Amino acid sequence: MKFISSILLIALLSLVAGLYLRFWALVPAAFVVSLLIPQPPGRSFLSGFLGVFLLWGCMALYMDAANNYILGTRMSQMIFKVPSSLLMVGLTALIGGLVSGMSALTASFIHQPAKSKE
Figure (cartoon, rainbow, N blue to C red):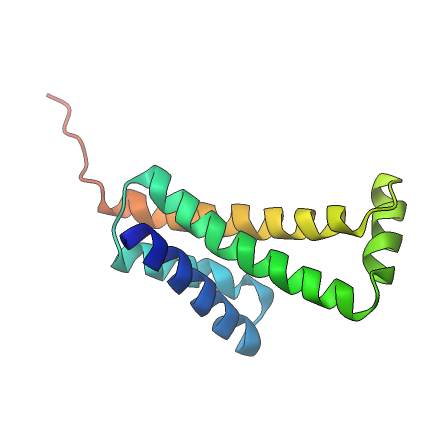
């Protein structure tokens, strides 16, 4: 339950923060949610990754569909020499997910107690 609520909170806070701040507002959103809902590092990274991956993927797909997939197709042809707008949507979601996942992972490491060397 903590995992799913963490994904939803990260997506919601990233969306709201992105409306009023710059695109990097997802970093503090994932960090704060991971601090408030402590999880093991792997789950914390995955919840941060999935929250923004799904959010940015849906948003990029919506924006690409709004212009009839023209911009995504042209960008993927220029960069990857492949005429697929879904590649650009996936790349956008992957970059946002990795950044958010690293932010959530950093917050989860704060919760782990320091191991003493004896």
